[in-house]
Length: 202
Image (cartoon, rainbow, N blue to C red):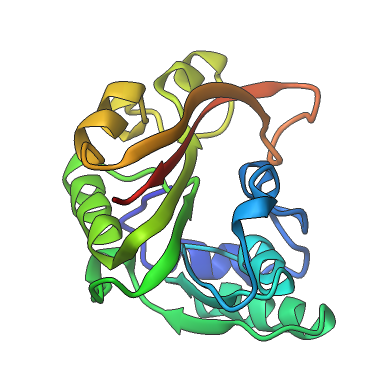
């Protein structure tokens, strides 16, 4: 989630517990067959490392980026506990320097940005993804707003299918669908609505 308060996520991740749990995003697990040892992955705004550490356990060389030092400290602790190495980089996604053709996988999970920042994010993801590489996005679908569960209040922050087709027009769409998701910050019996995208760069 986007916020103008630079300290919001630092304060939140400074809490003792792991806010979003330990399990990786199911979208990644469902595509385990794509992740081969020695391949590289960038996890954008990865928080406490639930996704980056899981990828490292598959044998990938992983870079986890997040704006909050407290989150990255938790990532390093989680990586150590799981016997793997993850490179961490502290940066705001809006200031990240996107290296061209740098990663086999570029992964962004539940980063809800306003349109102008989201456009820049997607352009950077395309730039840094290698030819033949993959982009994974899971984020709240605009229909999630109707649920009343946690998430931005402005519909412009939400994803929809046409947005993906427009911003990743050169990609082969491997998966693009709405799905129900459990929102960890709410009653686990309540379901949110997410968009799942996996695209392959030619």
